[in-house]
Length: 137
Image (cartoon, rainbow, N blue to C red; front, side, top):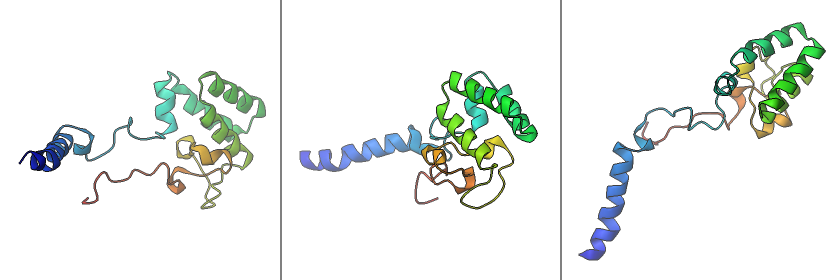
């Protein structure tokens, strides 16, 4: 009887607790669960939501000095991964190297580790896709 309790009931209790109380009960992932939240969210969390508009403006005008300034600001904020993706995007004219579409907004630019080698949009990145928490949905 004791073996049955430890092998069946305790794991079942842990599953039920996790299902009703823990992370598994949420239908959608929260921003804390997403490894690479949108760039606008990251900038807002770092106290610089205005920087997103500046980055978009710099890309429209293609001002080299402004782009260098934006790179410095991103480095000062400790956002080296976003800086690398931004530099790659500028060098590759903001064209996704996976689907060959133009990336029009900074929020559509992916900044995962693979983006340092090849510019790509968020829709083409497997690291950014939100996956279902359970297979039944």
